[in-house]
Every structure is written in structure tokens, then in C-alpha cells.
Amino acid sequence: MNESSTTPFLAACRGEPVPYTPVWFMRQAGRSLPEYRAIRAGIPMLEACRQPDLICEITLQPVRRHKVDAAILFSDIVVPLAAAGVDVDIKPGVGPVVADPVRDRAAVAKLPHLYADSVSFVAEAVELLVKELGGTPLIGFAGAPFTLASYLVEGGPSRTHAKTKALMYSAPDVWHALCERLAEITSSFLNIQIGAGASAVQLFDSWAGALSEADYRHYVLPHSTNVLEGLPAGVPRIHFGVGTGELLGAMAEAGADVLGVDWRTPLSAAAARVPGKPLQGNLDPCVLFAPDDVIDLEVRRVLAEGRTAPGHVFNLGHGVLPETEPDRITRVVELVHEHSRRSAAE
Ligand code: CP3
Image 1 (spheres, rainbow, N blue to C red):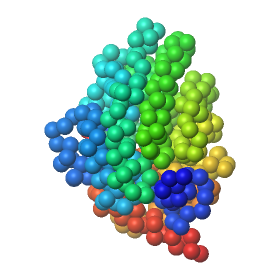
Image 2 (image 1 turned 60 degrees about the horizontal axis):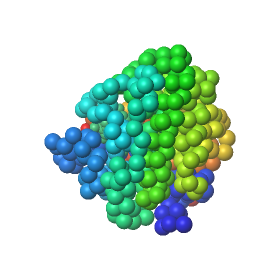
Image 3 (image 1 turned 135 degrees about the vertical axis):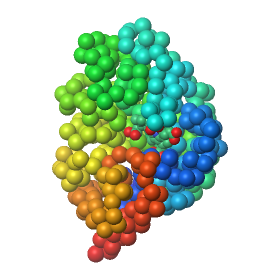
Image 4 (image 1 turned 90 degrees about the vertical axis):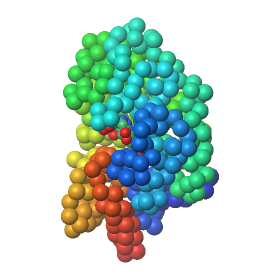
């Protein structure tokens, strides 16, 4: 057991009692923070993700400022793809863009493998962070096969995922071969972070909510299961997607310990769908643009709904929006701690 095994964040992930509800935010490191914009000035995203000192500093910024209960490694879901040799870049205001989209068997066969040497900068950053963070847990992360496949097949961000689904339906063998390769890359990337000292991991299947449950089960679940089941026991596995209210049961079956929920599904409804599973979420990121009294009310609502689950990690329902006022984020941390301490004492 390491030092951080008793923190509220890890206890909540395991459904154990907590003195207060732990809180962190997806995209807590990023453009909402002036200190992030300053340190990133002139450095392209993927280049920043390759520098251990910079990764370390950017990861620590929101922990220092907001006093959140967990850090999340500063990286991106396409970092392992780029490190393995896929020609992918992150365009500001757009997202990941892939030079040669992967749409047939030959392209799948050409996908490179990920070797630990290619992402030594990540292991180095995690080791530095574990020292710097003291007792605060570090969350490692990766993109799940479907979400990564969508960027590779579409060539960039997509609203409908039409080309991805077209490949899935018309060439299922190519689709499964692609997802197998991606599961292998994702699994290596997560294992490297855990090996270097990450206390928990989050598998982002951000865009899986675009699928019906039947398609999710047929085309995606086996691959996400391979990723999650291939991780060492004892490290909590959080699994999250946007608009996945209908998929929560299936995503739990993939081997998640904690289910991330977006703002559309009340945590009490989610708890009923995945009995026995701790939940993470789910304040609407836009509530951070609301007046103080509305923020307070919404935080209390999410906490109350979260109490219906065996464990609750407070978070947003998706990432912090870049226009968010940092003081609002800090305020939410204080409110979550204050209100949940009070109800724990009752
Ligand atoms: O603080 C954290 O949460 C850790 C950092 C993190 C980033 N990307 C940094 C980042 C995490 C967890 C991610 C994951 C990620 N990347 C996901 C899954 C999470 C989600 O949002 O659903 C996805 C789909 C991506 C792909 C991606 N990368 C997008 C859609 C974008 C935004 C493009 C833009 O400019 O609006 C990126 C770029 C990115 N990743 C930024 C950051 C801080 C912004 C780049 C910048 O600051 O210049």
C-alpha cells in the first residue's frame, strides 16, 4: 500500500467511507488557467506533452490553485499514437487531426506498435509527479479504442462519427483488427503510467455515447474489456464517456470500478443502473458560468444524488471549458468539501 491509498479520492473509488466527498475536474489543467496559458505560450500541444518538467508543472498548477483531491496527468489521448509514429497533430481550437486516415485493412496493418522507450517521457513525468504531489493521488489516463478509432478513421473530430460507423458496419473484421491494435496501444500506455506510480486510471471513451447499446456491446465492449481487464488489480479504473447514460451497464461490464457520468443522467438514475458501483460526476460544466446561488444549489443537488451510490467522486459532467473563470472552479472545490463534511457529520 502506498501513502496515497488512504486518501478520500481512492477511498471513494473503492466505495469506502470518506470524511468528505473528493473532487477533481476533467481538463482541470488547461486554458482556463492564466498560468497554463503563460507556460504554454509558443509551445505546440504535443511538444508540451513530451517534456517531463512541463508535464509536471502543468499537472501541478490546478492542484496548487484549486486544492483538488487528485491530479490528472497532463497529456492527451493521441500522445501514445503520436509517440508510436502515427502522423497526428493537435490543432488549437480543433483537436486531433490525422494526416492519413485509417480506413482499410492495409492502413490497419501499417499501424505501429507502442514501445515503452517511445513514451519514456511519460514515465519520467509520472515519477517526478508522484514525488512532488506528496499524498495527492495522480490519475493516469488513455483514450478507449472507439474514441481513438474515431479520430483515426475520420481524420479529425466528427459530430456524427459517420465514417467510423460505416467502417464498423461494412468491414467488421477490419474494424475489430483496428480496435485490437488500439487496445494494445492503450493498454501499454496505461500500464506504463501505473508502473511509474499513477494511483488510478481513467479510460476516456468520450464519443461512445454516439452508439446504440447493441452496437456498443458488439463492436466496442470486447476491446474496452481487454484494456481494463489487462490492468493490475488494486488500481481503481474509472471509465467515462459523454452521453453514455444508456451505456452505463455495459461500460461497467467492461471492468470499470468507477463509472463517470455526464450531466444528462442524474447520479441517482446512474446508481440504479449500475448497482454497487461508485460514480464520478456530474455538474454541468456550464453551471460554472451561473451566479453563486445557482452554483451552490447545483453542487448540493449533485452531492445529494451522489449519496445514492456506494461512493462518489465529484467532478464535472465533461471537461472544464476554456472560458471558465478559475475562481469559480476553486469555489466549487470549497463548496463540495464544506457541504459533504457537514452531511458526513450528521
Ligand atoms: O486536465 C486534464 O484533464 C488532463 C489533460 C487532458 C487533455 N486532453 C489535455 C488537452 C485530457 C484528460 C485529455 C483527453 C482528451 N483529449 C480527450 C478525452 C477527454 C474529453 O474531453 O472527452 C479527447 C477527446 C481529446 C482530444 C482533444 N485534445 C480535443 C478534443 C482537444 C481540444 C481542442 C481545442 O483546442 O479545443 C485536445 C487538445 C487538448 N488536450 C488541450 C488540452 C489542455 C487544449 C490544447 C491547448 O491548450 O492548446
